[in-house]
Structures are given as structure tokens and as C-alpha cells.
Image (cartoon, rainbow, N blue to C red; front, side, top):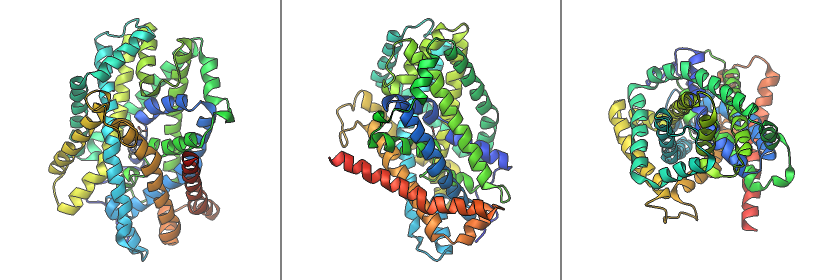
Length: 454
Ligand code: PFF
């Protein structure tokens, strides 16, 4: 097997693949989630573990996902099956793809809710709701929003429709244009925010919080969160990158593309943290404030900046777009599978999927109002979806991909796809994938479990 093209189409060039995968990777995980979980887990030590996980676990597994996708040129469910059969193993490896599709739905449920908040803030910034707002009032605006079921449903629904429109049109057209211009723009605005926070008076404290290593802050729980987040932020462990890899041109180098994507993703997360924490400290806010962190701190910063209303508007707009280009990739594996399996067109497939994710999203947003009493394993629905996907399903999916590519897939197939000219580099990747990455994931899982059972 060495398919030359996918029935779903192909990226026009290596760069478009890099942009699309970066569009998937850079999203709410970087700008919303990374700062708040860093805040909740004590700062520097957490950041260090996170960076370590990106490099040692994330990058090699991302290479494996891309190469499996490109070899089979099919949706992750079918790609896992085909490549397993090609290597003389059971087609049941497709279960990894199935778990990924399920994880994609579950992530989408809370992702769409947060993206809905972003859309609400775009509108709020646009109409001047946040001019000169203080931190208490910013907190109130956010909490009122959470309590307002109908408003949340409206913005969540708009986001679902936005995602489905792109999916229905095919990934290439919509996505290429979005990421080509908007990702660089987001980057520039983050730098503007960074500039603001550098002169806000809290920069040193923010920097210290993020980069001062204090081992006493670390628990196995924090390490698992860092590991899980490294999968989440790189869109790994659920097939999104595998699906995008299946549209990648044959000759493009996987290794350098993956390094570029991981580097851009990490840079955006670190800059977002450095932009947010100084504002937190200068305004006496709590870095461990949780999911509301970005929505409470940034309006305060924008409210005080000259021209802040416009910057704030553009900033939230770009975060919304980053969320959009990520959310698309959450549903692409399921869409591609439906097209392959039933021979449906993309439109009916995505209407069908759209209904499912809309319902799941309404359940997740209900956590803050009409379903706040519903608890799953002690979590509300929103937190449950987040916890189970990031901390269990994605690392498990990644672990299976590593074990599959390292131990089951024929070595020559990987060698052929990666086409790394230096045998030493290939061997380094192979060793990390076979031994280091799976062992690291397994150890973190097990120690976390032991800590929980204590
Ligand atoms: N990587 C995205 C983010 O950091 O916001 C989230 C995500 C997208 C996770 C796609 C998983 C995925 F398949």
C-alpha cells in the first residue's frame, strides 16, 4: 500500500499542510486553557513538564500520526485498519480511530461552549461593554454569561454552524485561506498584548510565576495534566492530525513539518501565558481562577489600554478564528469516515454530525445553569468532558499510536514515509517512539492512579 491520493482531496503544498495542522493545534488550548491550568497547577514546574512532554512525547507521536495517515490516505478509523493489515496485523486496530472519533465529539462539546464565550466577547468588545472595566465587574460579566442558558445556546449554535459550513465545503478551501492570513495576525496581536503586559508593572512577577521551577508545586496529578495538555494542544491522540496527514503531499518531509507545527504551537502558548499572568498579578487577581481566567483578565487589560476596545475586538476575533480552525479538525475524522463508509456527500454527513455535537454542547453548557446538579464521577458535564478526554482518552490514543507505529507497523513503511536521510536521526525517533514515549505515558498514568488511590 502506498496510496498516492485521498478521495477527500489534498493540501496544495507542504506549507498548506503545516498551516492547517498549526491551525488545528493553535486554538483555545493555547490561549484559554494553557494559562489557566498553569495557574491552577502552580506555574513554573508545570510549564517545564509540559515542554518536556511536547518534545519527548508529543513530537514523536505527531510524526507517527502523520505518517500513518499519509500512508493510508483515509480517515483515521480506516487508516489504522489498513496500515495494520498491511503490516500483517489485525484490522481491529481501527478501534484506536473509533476512540478518537468519540474523543473528538466529547472535546467539541466543551470547546464549542468556550468558543461561544469568545463570540460573545467579540460582540461585547465591539459594542464597548468593557471600556475601563475593573476586575470585579469583569468577573461579574463572565458569571452572568455563564448563568444565562439561552445566550450560551445561541452562541454555541452559531459556532456549530460556522464549523459545519467549512466542513461541508471540504477542508481545503475554507481552511487554507483562514490560516494563511489569520494565524500571523493572531501572532502579531499576541505580541501587542505581550507589549502591554511588559509595561504593566507585573511582568517580572508573571515571568517568575511561569518560569521559576518550584518542585514542591508538583503532584502526579499536575504531571498528568501537563501530559494530557501536551496532547490536547498538539491535537494528538484522536486522529485529527492523522486525518490532516492523509491529505499531505507525498514528497513533503514529515519531521521538519512536525517540528515547525510544535514550535509554533508552543510559542503561542508561552506568549499567551506571558501576556496574561502579569495582568493577573498587577490587578491582584488569582492565577488559579480556572476557566474564566482569560475572560476576566483580558477585558480588564483592554479596558485600560489606549485603543483597547479595537485591540480587544480584534484579539477576541482572532481567538475565535483560532478556535474555529481547531474545531474543524475535531470533526474531520468522523466526516471523512462517513464519506468513506456510506458514500455520502459531505453535506449530509456533516448535518448528521452537527446535530450530535450540538446536543452534546448544550449538555456541556448546562453545567453552568440548568444542568448544574448533574454530576459524572464527581464532575459537572463540562469538566467531565474536559477531564476524560485530555487526561485519559488522548494520552491513551497517543500511547496506542506509539505502540502501533513502534512495534506493529513494519519498519520499512515508517522509514519510507519519514524519508529521513540520516539513519541516526531515524533511529533516534524510533527509539523514542518505541520506548521512551510509551513508557513515559504509562508511568504517568500509573503513578497518578496510585496517588489517587492513596
Ligand atoms: N489543539 C486544539 C487547541 O489547543 O485548542 C484543540 C484540539 C483540536 C484538540 C483538535 C484535539 C483536536 F483533535
